[in-house]
Image (cartoon, rainbow, N blue to C red; front, side, top):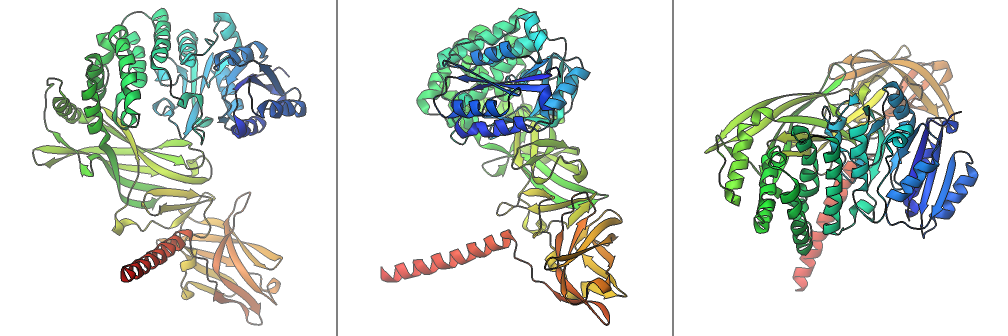
Length: 637
């Protein structure tokens, strides 16, 4: 078979972090005779070279390993991989990241279907940031003009091999930074078509536990901003002066310069290093970015850019202190099941030091000292409240895969003293059948207001609203909405929960058997009549019978006919499962037996306490013990 995709992986001392990368490549849904993996070992000194050689020996034809002396960065290994590649497309993967199981197949098919030279697959960031707006929807025919492609300049793309050869595109080599920016910027600007695949997470971008990823290392500011100018040169080479060039340049001014000098990110740096960064970037701001570049920034970013250009470092720090205090807060108001979906109503606004941020009702641009800058930013934010928006994202806890949920919202101004609070009142609809995979999904609210786009968890829920709705059985999936401990943020457990579903709360009179028909009122939500499988078991013996969950008020009524003749002589545990290809049984807190009079309910079974209850008990016991110990110490003193 012709090779469809060549995966190029530059490798340098990844240690055990390469294992997730290897495993994901071996799990690909693309048949192994349709792709190849080329590991380019850049002079590793750990056990990785031997590990890769053994893998290549075990997977001949699929895995190839090339060893070379250390070149200092990833550019040369990637170029060596391109030269060895036989595939129609080349996919670049870093040795401490990994792919979704269907990534190669989906990206290849999408690229071929759309005649793409470059395919950008949806990314998830595990401990590190990834573009969000770019992956709001699929873009089969994307350009730097109609999509925020410029937000994604990492090399983790699938690129047509003959396109690379036709334009002679290769990575800059040597010890340098931002080689991927130079490469990807030119690819975007010269490709006939770029396709963005957003409905499947293709690439998992991982921050290592030891934070030793190359991109997280402290860098030489002078060399870094020199390399940044090389990326700007690429844009200048392939665009004309004007709004498009300014918009593309704005990405580097915003991300690589201004955002490094803002809020918590600046304040977290050592004082001497952040001043060194400031001094190195100031010349770039003055010399390379025209007035049209900064003019398109958000007000907060304009303030920082102007302070950098004016060489006012102390004011940059003061403004960062104020910005660091501004955070979003999303307050849940209600959580209900409606027509097979979860309806989540909430409000969102910005707060500062725990209090709602109050904005002036009107404002004008004022001279640029820090207090005036704050006044201008808040006034401009209030004036542009009509552009604000709020989104709800579900983010899977273990993988960091995230998806936007449908949201409707209104904007509300609430008078507060001499100003106004700017509140977004929203209602989101979560369809569990559309959530991609099982797991624990945390709810995040993304607020775009004025010059800020920030995220927070949805919570905490007020104490009187912390009773979540029943777990639901929807289209074969078991969905448990719950408030986390101790922060009371909203999460959804999909097809994982067992002991926290509330089934242990059945009252004795909620279960009955009459004429062999079992009836049980369960605290479960169902949208309509739902077929289930009932399992009764005793030791190694088990009997499965069909049943139905009927919507009954706020819960569900389980009905099933039990075969009395097969249940004699033992006490049987009872469990229920949705009717799926792979049933997952949920224990019910009672047992049954069969005798001369037919089947009867014997007793409720005591269910184990949930982990949340146990944690609360342990904390309570701990508090008692600590208080007693303190009293003893005081008496001795």
